[in-house]
Length: 196
Image 1 (tube, rainbow, N blue to C red):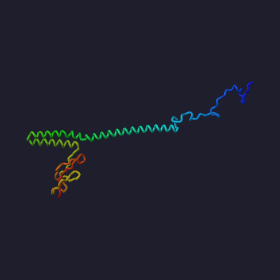
Image 2 (tube, rainbow, N blue to C red; image 1 turned 45 degrees about the vertical axis):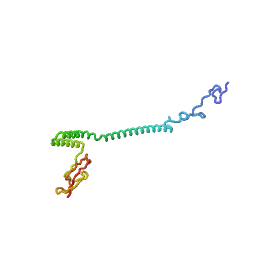
Image 3 (spheres, rainbow, N blue to C red; image 1 turned 30 degrees about the vertical axis):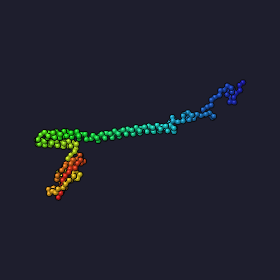
């Protein structure tokens, strides 16, 4: 008769060695460190958090560099456009002045061929009116001065003259008309001012 084991479960020879149960005393328990690589793919782990922050930093740095490049390109475009606008700002005025220049040349040629002073004077009057119209279209207006009180912002006194008919400081003579562009003086009127 075969010998029974101390636990009474049958012959010792017939029993196969059972594997130790997980968690039983003396059985090795697998740790999380054994199950996964120490590092980056573990959500919430310090290494994973560092990797995520590195990626965010790289993306933010890339976005910053792109924004800086776009801003620099925009700045260059604006400076180029401003330079071009400054260079050609007088183009509309010059286009309007060229017909006046043409008429002055025609008047000179006509004066060389004729002795008719009246026709020559009429031609120059027309050119003068055309020039006034061009200046007006470009908001350049003559400064009214004759008979007005002297204003140092708009007038330049070149002389004084006693006058019994006008109060002191009145413009008696305009020797050279002044002009303003919108509200800025292009050239002050040169005037003679009355004194007591």
